[in-house]
Image (cartoon, rainbow, N blue to C red; front, side, top):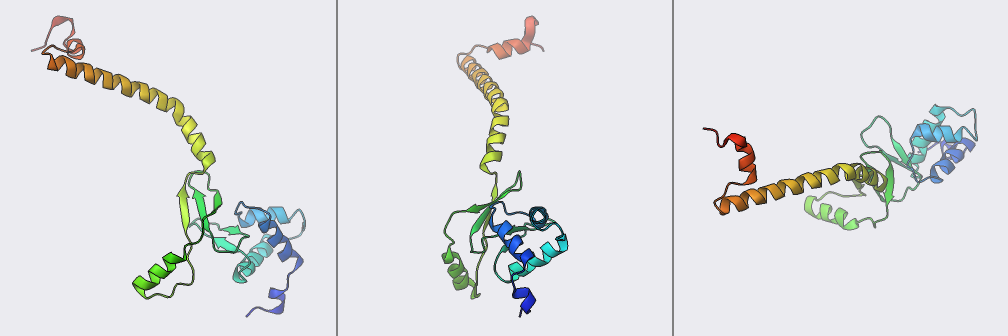
Length: 181
């Protein structure tokens, strides 16, 4: 299936694989290219792409495509789950066991022959979540004060209506001249 040159571990392929396996960041081909250029200055971006394709076909790496114009790559070729932050775009490995029960359930329900599956979670990473919560903290505190004031006013209004007395809100709406007719 692969030619001898394709299966031989060239210096470029080895550098690409080592670079990819040395990070947990699930980088793009451009990032890998920039890193490998420190070791092999004359390597081309095309060489990086060709080797990534070959390494994927050989089962050495995973290509993660999230529907964007570029893929990300994972040096851990074992089946595992991922989490993608919708804010910063980072991809994280998820330390959960792969559920083969899902595959068996699908086979039982459909008659399909399932070889593997890929599961990805989407949301906010802890860093982006903290940023959002701190940004909302100030706005959230003001909103809580406003909500408390609204609830207090509603309670006063309801209490005044129950006692047959106009509430201070009703009096404010009437102004100094009494009710408008």
